[in-house]
Image 1: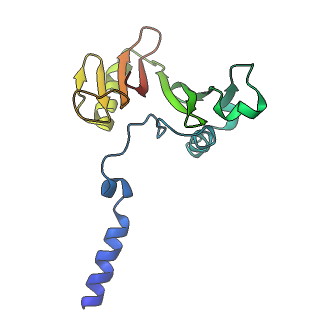
Image 2 (image 1 turned 90 degrees about the vertical axis):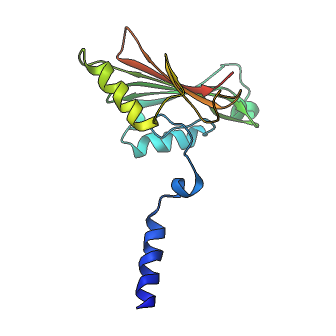
Length: 167
């Protein structure tokens, strides 16, 4: 009897997501977060069904030397079913890592903004600021360098999400 209870508790412990045990997950857009490398971003996009033909990696600036290519800023642009995702890289710790993520969510009707806003509130929880909706990976007020996510209405699309380090 004791062994069955132990096995049941062990099975339950294995089902608890690591993020729950480790505390809150970092802010993300489509499971992408600041500090990721380009290869990890491309893998994550592919795992979400965004084919390599829908995601383009751009190396910039053009004057980067091959020896410095890992530290050169880059960006990835990816078409999603809902809009356009632009991931910008900057040299961090000797390699190019995600420094900013912008997601333009395309409107399909007048109610789209409210629907997307409600989805953002459900996904990220209560914001630390209401205008624009903002979330921070840190205490309130959001400290410099912490991940800051903002959600805004946009005239050309339903909404724009932006994730960056707070200046």
